[in-house]
Image (cartoon, rainbow, N blue to C red; front, side):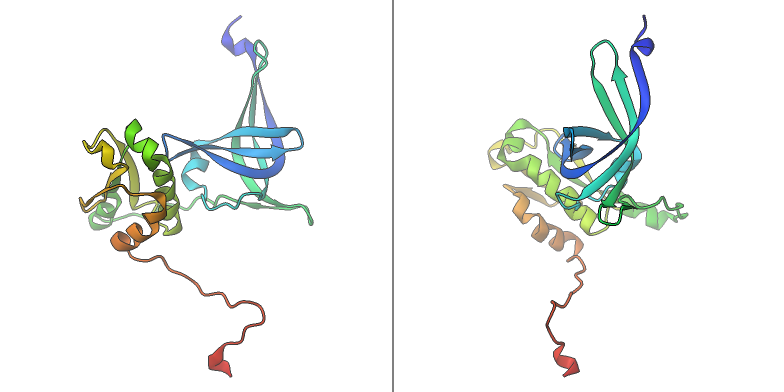
Length: 213
C-alpha cells in the first residue's frame, strides 16, 4: 500500500491553555504547545499564521485551535496543523481571532519598497548560539513585532562572523557590528537604531489626573 493509503486526514478542534511557542533556528516560529484535557499537544502553524502571529501572546491564554489532523494508520502517529487560532473566553463561551484578518496590499512606489530591505544579521553558529544567540533572536523577533516593523525589518541568520569568543554577534541594517549582545539589551539596541517604541500611559485605578484637579 502506498503512503497515501496509510494516512487518514480529518478536521480537528481543540481548546486549551497556551503553554509556549515552538521556535526553529532560534527565531523562526514553527508552532505552539497547547495544554488540553488530554495533555500537552504540539500543533504546527500553517504558513499564513506564522507570519501574522503575535509573539506577545500571554502564557496561559485559553485558545481554540481549528485545523487539519493527519493520522498514520501504520505508525499511529498523529500530526496537527492549525489553520485558525482564536482566543476563547470560557465564561461567555465566545471566541476572538488571535490573528488579524488579511489586509489588501497597497501599491507602493519605489521609495517605499526600499524600506523593506533592512536586515538584522545574526550569527547562527553553535558558539554564538551557546552564548545566548537563540534568546537573542527571539527577543529581536518580539521587539520587531512590538514596534510593528515586520514589513520593514527581517532577521537573517548567517555563518560565522569570525568572532566566536565574543558572541553572540550581530550586524544592524546600518552595518554597525555588535558583539556579546544579550536578549536583555535588545530593547535599548532597537531604540538606538529604530527609535523608541510608542507607549500609551494607562492610569491606575484610584488615581487622579493632576491637571483636572
